[in-house]
Image 1 (cartoon, rainbow, N blue to C red):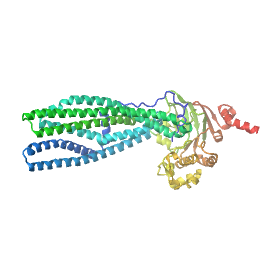
Image 2 (tube, one colour; image 1 turned 120 degrees about the vertical axis):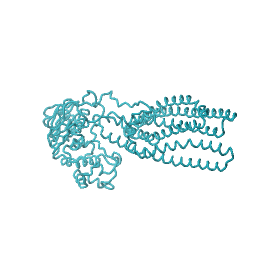
Image 3 (cartoon, rainbow, N blue to C red; image 1 turned 90 degrees about the vertical axis):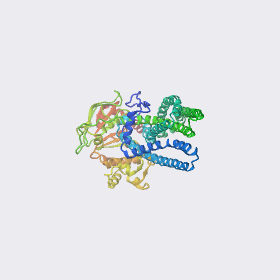
Image 4 (spheres, rainbow, N blue to C red; image 1 turned 60 degrees about the horizontal axis):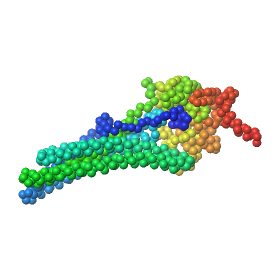
Length: 612
């Protein structure tokens, strides 16, 4: 029920300097408050978490055993020709390898399952939160950016929750066990191996510092790209109509190039980091072999120890490389988490009433009492607007584009809070009514009808299971929509394409009338409801409108004055000010703004007719 069409147009209530919400993040790769908040999505599944962590620790413990088993096999069995002992050691080695494979399978399955469950709940929370945000939030945030939050950023978090955190824990444990086994095997060779650690730590810190900035740039460019694509795919007809394909392609090329460059920067840092770690690992291996050779010449070291240490050095640097990969995952995930939680922390809501009231047996009387409203700062879209629409009255609102007509409907539907004055329904202030209570009694038929993917029946009921099949068919018959619906394949089960693309404008409009009818609202809002239909369809629904409006308070926004001449009251808006109000005849007699609008619409016609 988006009635903010008018203020979204150029020349509306938003000032020229209106800026959308900033999209920056801190970039801290290990933000503990964010990690704790993410952990809330894992906490409901303690069995899965325990199984994943336990298997990870067990797998980390088994891996360092293989070099030690190799050392025992060489020194205790091969060196003395003990083939039977070597056979048993081979069986032990095989058992460790098989157990590692089984543990890796279980660990992968449980961590992925845990991540999927956590991310599913996160997606639900995001979607629920987006539905509850006020329209003011969507006025200043591109849809493409919000889609990026709910898709790309959540998928990044899925990668971390599914493999990042638990695997990071496994790497830490594996490193710890490797160090313990190395010290136990030969503490001197351990010190030699670790002599290159300061160099490795310096390389790692430099890499982290540079790649963090690169990944922030990547996420920002992804959001820009998604926002651009969403906007231009939606407006593709306008682009083609005005021949803007090449210009828009050039804009997309610039954004795409920025996205490419951000990715290339991160790739460049990785292309340096991985060879550097390999080089450091090779140096450590060389030092171990050199020192071992010196000790073996003095018969102070066995061959099994040397072989085991070469394996340990390789094993030691492998989790270090994995940690850099996990840092990559953590970096992008924390960046995404900060964006997602910033979205979830948005408090752009209509202030809920402390003691909410209900409309019992509503009559539908509407009153605007000295209402002032601005979308931003003090750029007033409505200024001191006051009028009363009595129960059952038909009140029309006319005025130029940007005069505040649709804004009045948005305020009545409680999409925005007013800054001054008050709006009442049956004498009850809208501030004392919940959004759901207000909208339960208001039906809105817009000029631009929005239809969802699904059946025609679903688009009429909008998922309200209390609406019966009989109500749907009776409403469709009443507004004259049944004839075309029943001719469609599968009738009311006809699958509507995105935004109702396969239906004509008139057909979509008729479906919106059926939708309003089945909800049986006490207040009916018609926002240019017949301006987009052809003459034949307009005549078809005029009689249906009479039945639809009977017994209801009707607010009618119209540019064609011929459609509102029989209204009980006409409000004439000009630049946010209610300039005139009265019946059609009264306003013509005043020879004011309404009279000028009437002359503009009908004087040329009369002049042509008179001269013919």
